[in-house]
Length: 121
Image 1 (cartoon, rainbow, N blue to C red):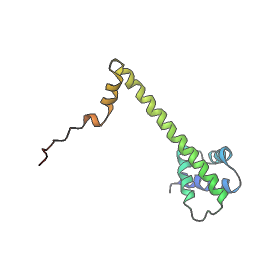
Image 2: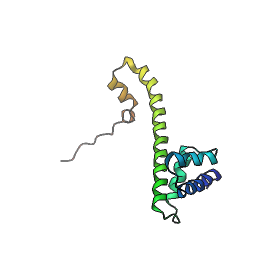
Image 3: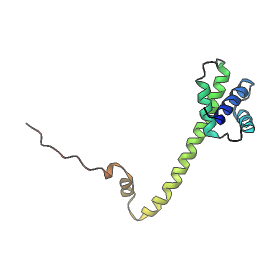
Image 4: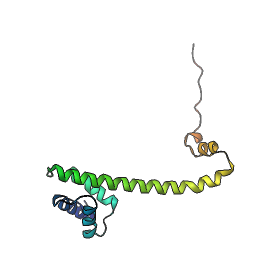
């Protein structure tokens, strides 16, 4: 495990066991680890959930909630970037029908059709 993830992991457990949750826990971690971001916090959180020494249900629920929140935030940011990249492509294809533009972006449209063999009767 890398140094940054290990530090985030330790501060995540420390903050959760001291009673911090949600934004307060996030602020606590970011204040102590300068390289902390949503992706690293989510990974450290899921790593902490698999730790057999953690048995306190409240701590585990707090870590789980924070990890899921930051995992979803990370994935929604990626979706926003993908959507932004797709918009210029659609603008270029405005002269064509919408169904044609969708078909041309499809992987299936570029695959060759299989050779049909006659059925034996």
